[in-house]
Image 1 (tube, one colour):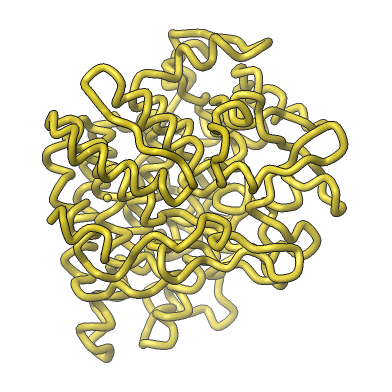
Image 2: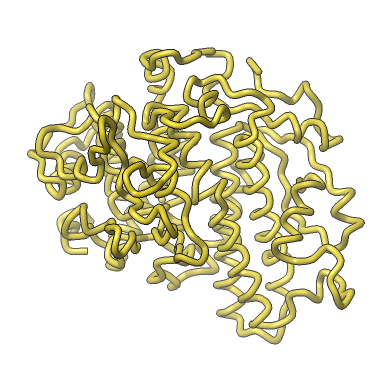
Length: 457
């Protein structure tokens, strides 16, 4: 890490049935009990691959989660015809919004897959300890990521950590809505275990590795306002020697011939897509090559780039509009989705240094990212660092899997003002910029009721 030598982050029945159909049959063909469905290294690896397949969902890292959070903020504008997207773009999603429901369902479906691995793999005595640890650690880290997505989007959610092992258990699986603190406690517990279990497991672009867990841990601590506690995790990633900024921003992304392949230098964790399991991002963003063009860059994103900012080059004209070109294969979806890049961690470090009033080093770190984009240096101080860092994260990480604009501006207390600047947006401060708990969840889960709905919905 050359640049940093100087400075030494459902279970409801309908949901679980959906997951089981995709991953493990609720009534397996050979009538094997659930605990026998992961029995050795091969079936454990298959289960882990199934978990990563869950992350490829069109409602997680292949579409809805990224689109809807960006529409709720000021990252995108709705350029298509889906009423569910239009509701979110105007900051007034219905409790019956189908895409809000599908995000919820897809996350819990993947959580179910993670739970099965976490429960069963540690007890397999016919697998080497190192393999058990790495497989279980990945599942713990991914479960933490999924709950982190949910708690920031919906607030407190039901906590499910046990995997049903039979169809009768699936039917009786109910869970009440927990507080955000309970969810954060589980997230932190999962991450602490994941980091310990995956010690030394780091250089794997498409695996939720040790540095991915530490990057997530830093983000979780930021969300909880625990900035000093996040600093060691950030520094561990920076000093690991396994990552650096790619030489150019454009090299992080592909073209219509090759698609986006996660950069091996900068990627901490990305979701792999091929033409077989195609990513839907390009289809929804693209207009000129046969895409749906349901989502376009907002005027706020377009105006956020300074003159000469090379990151603007991934937004190109299409007729009288503009389209995002970070995903360039709308036909077959052979484009990877970044979840965590090294630039994200660099910007986290700039923020934590600024919060220590170490503005000299904070400026130095931030400017490493700006210099890569072809921009001149800026100087952070106590009055500007929040706005500058939020801006830099906006233009660096737009349209990627972290859904950074929504999450960062909400964390920093900027999202209220952002929404009020959007044309035709509904601003209801009682909602606290959360999405509604899906009505389908309230109706099908006997452990919650309409009283559990988020305020303002």
